[in-house]
Length: 100
Picture 1 (cartoon, rainbow, N blue to C red):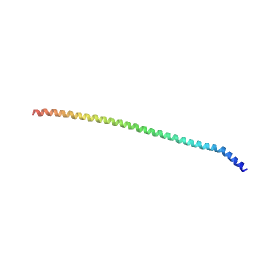
Picture 2 (spheres, rainbow, N blue to C red):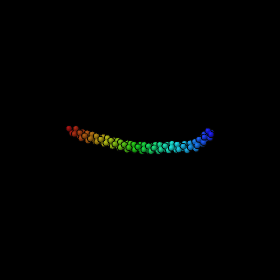
Picture 3 (cartoon, rainbow, N blue to C red):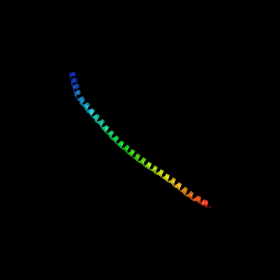
Picture 4 (cartoon, rainbow, N blue to C red):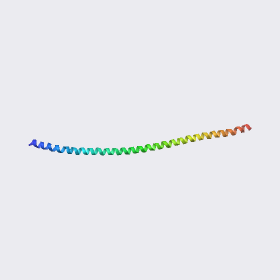
């Protein structure tokens, strides 16, 4: 009788254990899938932030390049003005020195 009870118990556990194991596996798989979805969403959010930072950096670089170009243009204009004034002042002072 003890062997019969053990056989029945083993038969019952053999039928229940796969279903319980399957439910446990399904729950574990579902939990892992939920974690994966959360990680993907987090990854998408981080990627969007990185794209925003890259765009801002490119805009700042373009603005800095424009300022540098304007700075070089102004330096050139100042140099030309200095040359003009040197010639103008130098040209006017030479004849007045010669007249004296």
